[in-house]
Image 1: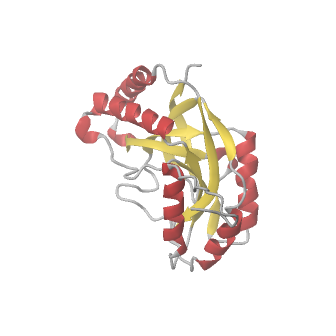
Image 2: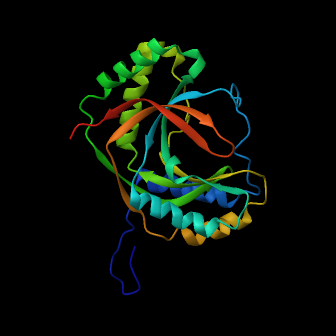
Image 3: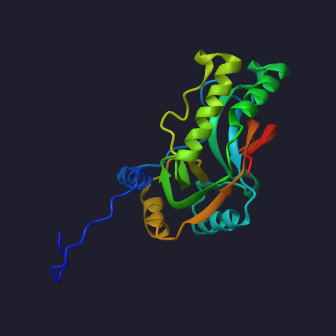
Length: 235
């Protein structure tokens, strides 16, 4: 193709992550209503905890970045902001805590240590902001280092629990960091309008140097956890 001056120019192809973001944004732009994120999923109840692998973040740049978006959405009372100490990326679920005795949890930690040996710290790009009916989130890229980590953690789970007990979720793995969760089912138009503008904000770089096995619980409209095993990536 040529520009207005007749000089040949070519569009830069989108990366896999950029194409997924563009496609998913178009899908969300056609969404009519938001959805309540806080419905009780199968097996969950207030007194039941879940073991899962998360990247958890204590990064001031990310905290400030997320807070900026949350301020812009604060008047939408159907969006619950993720607490500063709750910023995370889901990597791989394991099982309900009452299904795994302590010795099995310890064995999982040991197997994960072995599987993750040699993983080096990596850097992600967080952004742009995006949404699905249940809330808003920051895209994360590239996917490859997180996908590799997830593959190794799934292998550790398979070693301890057997291949038939490795959860499939997230079924379509697209690394992201939640910004808000929706607590009602209002029309989606307001969120679409706000995010159309907010998506222009630049992304930030986010270092990743560890992964944690958490015992996760729901506390009203937030996730809370206790760390059951910690793995530092080797420099």
